[in-house]
Structure formats: C-alpha cells, structure tokens
Image 1 (cartoon, rainbow over the protein chains, first blue to last red):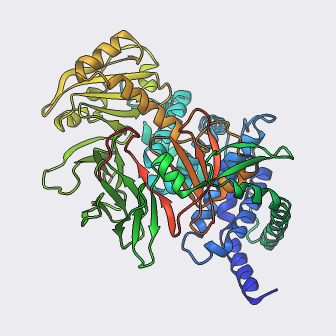
Image 2: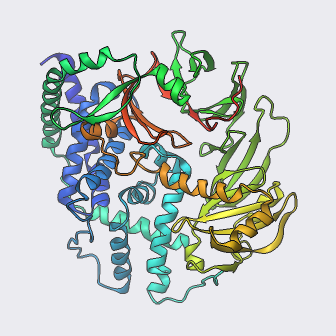
Image 3: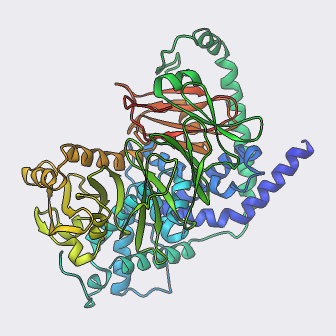
Length: 181
Length: 399
C-alpha cells in the first residue's frame, strides 16, 4: 500500500469516527428502521470513500456525505417501490422515560404521518427540524432550489396539520385558534 | 399554530434520534466501506474492459448527433455521447468555465467567452440581457457582451435569488430576522444600472413566490388547511396578514396562490397597483372553473394569467423530481447520476445535468423533445457547471 493511500485511508477513518454517529441518527430518522439505517450509512460511507480522493481536500466532505445519504435513501425507495411498501410505522423502541399520555399519542400520530411522506419531503423535514439547516443549506444538500425546499416543507407541514389538527387540539387543550379565513 | 407544530417536530426528532442505539465509534464501519469501495472499483474496471470495443464503435459515430438510450447486448441501459458543442447548439446550453488565467467565464452558446467573476460562483443564471453571478455575499450582473459587471451586495447571508420566466426580472429574497416573513426586491432588466428603486413587497414565510409577470404574482402556499378545497370567497389577507397588500403596493394587479396539496385549487386576489388591495377578500376555487378564470382575467387584465399559473404549479412539482422525468430508468448510470457532487436542473425544466468538475463526462437527461433521453455530455475544458437560463427558447436573445 502506498503512503498516499495509507494516509488517505487514515483520514477517512478519522472522518468516519467523527461523523458516523450523526449520519446514523439522520439515517434513522429518514428510514424509521435501525437495520435499514445501518445499511444506508454503510452504503453512504462506501460511496464517500470512492470519492475520497477528490473531496478530501475540500471543505465539503460532510455536505457530500449527507447528499449521498439523502439521495441514496430516495433511490432505494424508487428501486424497491415495485415490490415493497415504504415504511408505514416507525420502529418502536422501548423508551422508559416516556409515559403513555395523550402527548405521546400525538407524537406517535406525527411519526406515522412522517413515515408515510414521500422520501424527499421527509428529507426536507429532517434537515430542517433535526439538523437545523437553513433553507438555502437544505437546497444545497438536496440539489434543489430554495423555493422548492420551502414548498415541500410547507406541503409536509400542511399534511401534518390536516392530520393532527393543532397539536394542542389533539391534546384536548383549548387554544387560540384562528377562524377559517 | 405553525410554531407549535414546528417545535413539536424539533423536539420529537431530537428525542427519536437520541433514543437510537449507537455505537460510539465502530472501527469496522470504515474498514467495510474501504473494502466495499475496492470491490466496486474492480467491477467497474472489469465492465470498462468488457465494453471497450463498443466504445470504439460509438466513437466513430461522434459527428452524427443522434442521442438515445437503449438496451445493450446484455439488456443494460446504455447512453450515447453528447458533445459540449451539440448541447450549446441544440439546448442553448452555456457553461461556467475556469479559464487559464484563473478567472471564471461563461462559454456561451456561440462558443464565445464572457468573463464574469474572479471568485468561484455558487450559481450563474442567464437573464434577458445579462448573466447573474451569485456568490455567498453578492450578485453581479454582467452584460452579455462581457462589459463591466454591476455588483449588488446581498443584504443578509440567507438572501437568495429567483428569476421570472423570460429573465426580465430578478427577485432578491431575504427572510426577516424571525423567519416569519420574506422581503422580495424586484430588480428589472436592463441589469446594467440599479438607479431606480426596486419594487419591494413582504409576504408571509408560508408563501413562496414561484413566478411573476408584469401584472400578476404567482405564489404557492397551503390553502387546503383553511379552505378544505371548498370554492368561495375567503379572507386570507385580513385574517392571516399574508402580505398581499404590499404586493399590490409594489405595482401588481393580481395575485394568485396555488395550493401545494392540490395544485388545481387557487385563490385570486384583486390588487390595486401602487396602493394595495382593490377589494377585500380572495376568490378561491378550481383553476379550470369559470369563476376563477373570469376573476383572474378581470383582476389581471392579462390573457396569459391562467396559463402562467398552471406553469408555476408544474414547475413546483417537476423541479423537485430527481431524476427530472418521473419513472425514467437510469439503468447502469443510476449510481453515477445520484452520486455526483453537482446537480443542476434547467429552470425551464428542459434538462437535468449531474457531474463533477473533475469528471471527463457528465450525465445529461434531456426532456426537451418528445421522448426523454440520457446521454454522456463531454463538458468543455475547465467547465465547472452549466449556466441556468430563464430565457425561453424562441424568445429574442440579446448579445
């Protein structure tokens, strides 16, 4: 193995050690399933390593990896859509910190809705509300215009609102709701 | 309500992510990725060696542009070649090129070089009579003949730009500090002087400007939550303060909001140019209904308003597609198409291009003809991206 390759591999290992947890979390939110999330991250890292020679000296390694993560997830859905249904319900994991109140019922309803969203709409939500990216940053990761990010996020939120009503209303809490315009 | 929902989303996503079972540092991940990449590279080398003879045959036919996608001997999808010259001639495609002197230039459809920037641009747009070069901090307008650019400093780091169909105006869009509204400044062609104060309006962040003509501004937004898809008069401006009044003050005669959940459903507001609203309330219903078409024709006094509204809707839906043509089979090119660092979609939705500046070829999905097709485009030397054109084919081109 040449010294250059060895050095590149070491840089890649450092990158993986530093960023894999964040990629895993995002992948979990995107797929709703831990096993699929692990596959997605592994595929993303393999593709990232293939491009490592040209991206390692840039400051956009993480942007590239994220883009691969989100696009690969979208393409998996396309490839599998003929024989598999998209995830219907997010995998439930034991969560001892949560009591089963109305609040968790609203949140579960929210997740069921998110799980049924088109993959790219879900990607916009994860980038915006989990990764706290600005709309121009989301546009860059997904390779779409800022206006499209806005409209897709708005579409996803509208569906969520339609399904839940207001969160407070779903919880049975009185709220200052605006009358229909 | 939106804030409620958004904060709930944030906290739930954070909770879910925290609950995910993670191994802090799994050294096997990197090793598996390196090994997997090695296998992929070996397969690619074997495939390249096996297809070498076929490439020679394709090379002999390079002077006849018959781009196509079809099945190879093994049934795999294969793509033809497209040269940069062909893309320039057939699609009016222009490229941003890093010249030998270190400056960035546009290589236009006539093969001429137009210097645009010393700094690497984020995007370059073709407008009616200028190239708009966007960087993180500024937008510069370079006349098509390469005369000295006019530089417009962005008011905020979050500012972005949108152009209208035809490229006669550019909107500089800046969110307010609280991200509840967006301010639009409309800059007019010719883009060689910005002496005249731009038209300005401010609308709710829930609305997105899609396109605009001299008379009408087309937005997208969530109408269904309020209307439930029921036709009739509504009072969005009065109840939600969406900012329609400021759009009228900026000089528009009509405003159309297209529902994002059902693009067939629209609301039309009658504006008073220069002053605000011509009448309170908005008429909502199907874009194909007589009531809406009459309202739009009356408010906009513009026979094209309905068609422009339909175009705005189509742009929202299709610009998000990846690939551009829904259901298009990319075959063996799928991974390459998806893994490129560069992805550009023509604002007029005629083509989509993916690639890296270091690649010998980029992948071009051309949807300008009757049937979409994929080809390998050989970019000009030094090309880093295509120019995104808002000038429609067949429209008078300057320069």
